[in-house]
Image 1 (cartoon, rainbow, N blue to C red):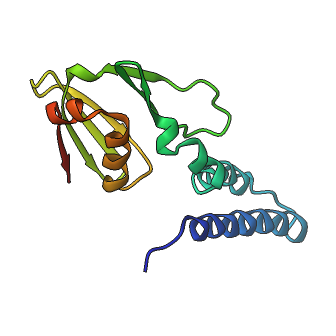
Image 2: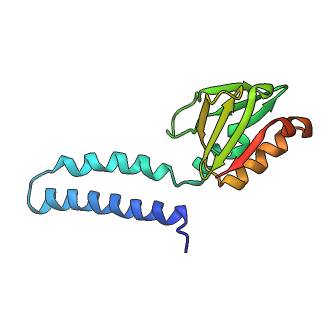
Image 3: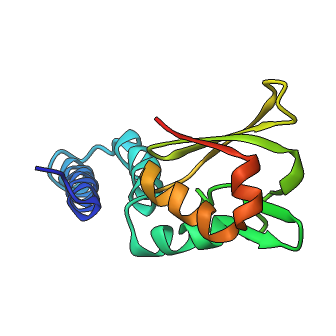
Length: 149
């Protein structure tokens, strides 16, 4: 059984609510504040963002990998909810010699020399390969070795 992201989100929300309740319980019943409990809430709230529908929509493959003339544009994951500018890297298609995809990761080897770049995605290896095949032409696919790990 594969756990859905919504289960993680609800689990984190339950921890957040229990921390807030215990903070106010300590404050009103024992008349002492424990600010450490509230400090734990902020990172947990940011972690909850990772499991929302908005996060998955912003980081869909179609938004992270795009074709622009003879280049592929790769964007980084938008991990923070308020981040507006996402660094983008353009790679000429003729420089790509090997593409290796695994779950949530894409590795591109440039110029056949073993040097390249890695990108983190939210997709399975088959989804990544399928999306890249849809962006590249048949002649470009013949020149590029594609692996799925």
